[in-house]
Image (cartoon, rainbow, N blue to C red):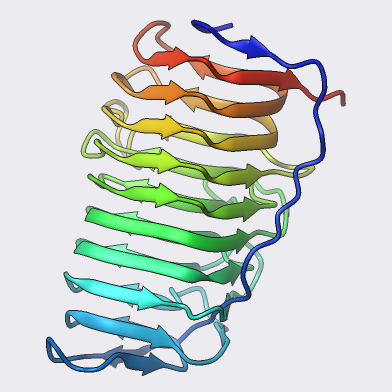
Length: 269
């Protein structure tokens, strides 16, 4: 037990009802600043700032990202539509690569290896999405991830519903920090391993995220609820509800993060 953890005697079912969703395209979308929102109807690469709105469900038939964002100052509204992946733990629903000031909201992402992937991004907002995996098992790195942040700073991840994934919210790399992860509902299934996970970046043996706030989330039906690697330090994990199979909260280096006032309950297997 960490800090002031509160132990619950009962665990109820965690239901997720949220949104209807979006899909994919591989044309390059460009927009002049100040122009009206650009409509997306197929897999798309966004290379210019501006507002974009998904106008119909998009089905991605390949392992590429359905929508890939390289530009700063982008707003992407899924408008209640679905992005549907190819299954088989392949592809990303939305990828934000090296961009700043990007907001993604209001839709449904399903059947991808990674629902939302951000690499070297800053000032990212991901909110109001439903992200569904297929609980298809696999072995790392060939697994389903709800939201993946790699060397990403100042991200706000809140009020999303993530279900049936191996890893729920995965934050990686010493370049990650100052992220705000709040009020998400993260639910595993038979193959759920980790609800919220902090690790080094791919290809790095050390160096974890630091200075994040993980607050008021519900994390349920994973083998481990929250896990911090040895070099993931100075993060605050506070007032979350964690319903777990084997372990609620794990710190490889005990006392290196602030972990307090979380409600923990073990689910019978």
